[in-house]
Structures are given as structure tokens and as C-alpha cells.
Length: 100
Image (cartoon, rainbow, N blue to C red; front, side):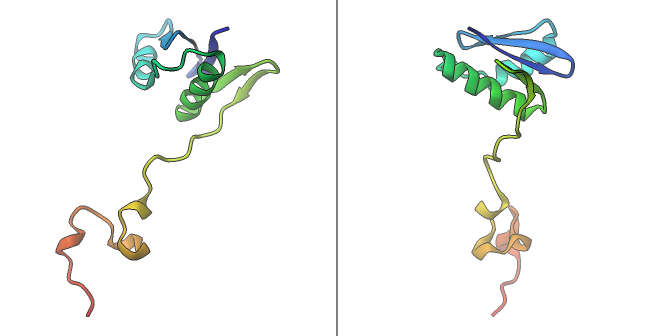
């Protein structure tokens, strides 16, 4: 059974590692996130839940349409901040004077 989601008023179906949607721009956005390894029913549902959450949409479940939760961020500011000081994060942080 393919996984169905609804984003921006458009319905999209994920099956066999590919998205199908009548809206070309939404299909392109979803295909950019498509996981070709998601071939089982559980993997399709998990991937559809991730995509729906990423774009703030709904996912179809046996109980009807439900709001998908936003996925955890893949990169956090704490990953780049030295010594857990977010104010020092940034790509030019190495040029700042250090407190001695």
C-alpha cells in the first residue's frame, strides 16, 4: 500500500522509492528528498512521515489524515559552537580574539 501525504493542498503518493504528484514543483521538492531504499510498507510510511513533517503537511494513516511532526534538525548550532558557546559559532569564529 503506497504512502499518501498532503502538502500545500496537494496530495502526493510515495511508492517504490518515487513520489507521484500532480503539482510539478511539489513533486520536484519531494523527489529531492526521495529515499530509493524505502521499498517496504513500513519504510514508505516512515519516509512519507518525514517528508510531510519537513514541509508541514499531513500524512494519511488508518485513522485518517494526521498532522506530521517536524523532524529533528540534522545540524544544530551546538555542533559548531566551541565549548557550548553559541555566540562564538560561525565560519569566521576562528578570527575573533580569544579571551585570555
